[in-house]
Length: 275
Image (tube, rainbow, N blue to C red; front, side):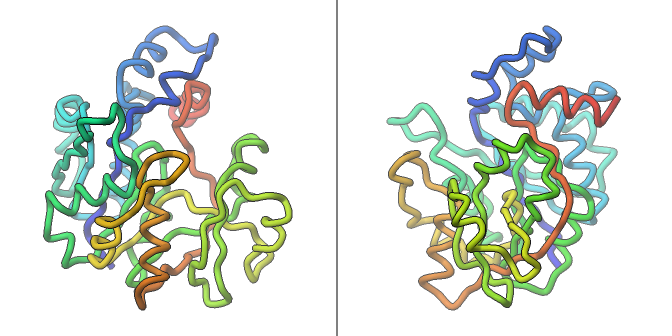
């Protein structure tokens, strides 16, 4: 069990800002174009991240670390309004952007900068998730309350309620018979999918919710740039940890949807959850 979770919210929300949706109301379009996507409001005028934090609180986490970038003040001011509704301590870490770049350096760099700024993470167990996926209380319980040193939730792809073409582009995970992660397969071909079914004949994908020990830090520190995306990606650091040390990453099976906030069209779907 771990009481700490890091939420990665340092991205630029580029796909959200670039996407178009002519049926979206003007207020939501303005929010999507100006704010970090997890600050877009739903339901009773509460930001997306409120609902994520609510599920984190219900799962029993006691420490939340929010990794942000240029929208730090917006996040802090927004979350301060709801502090009394959550039974945890919240801290902020800042993902600084290198001088020669316009965008952050990726998810591996995000967690690396978090661990540098909050060094007690190097000696502890903690979870990590995205800020634009609405993971369930069940999901948070599974990633928090397990005996593994390193773990991730291995989602059954058949339960993800996204358009077929979108789901088919998701990276799949290759695991051995003991549920140990062996590989992330990006943009898998149909043949690769069929060759990497788990023991239950299921296609498993990662939705970026993990549990780590402090050992991950040295692999984040030396994580190379992805040659195509020119970012340092968390799956790369994870695979380097598995391949270069005695550590493992255990897949925990889960079968449920994860509402996602990537583009403006997703706002309609999230709206329906809180109507």
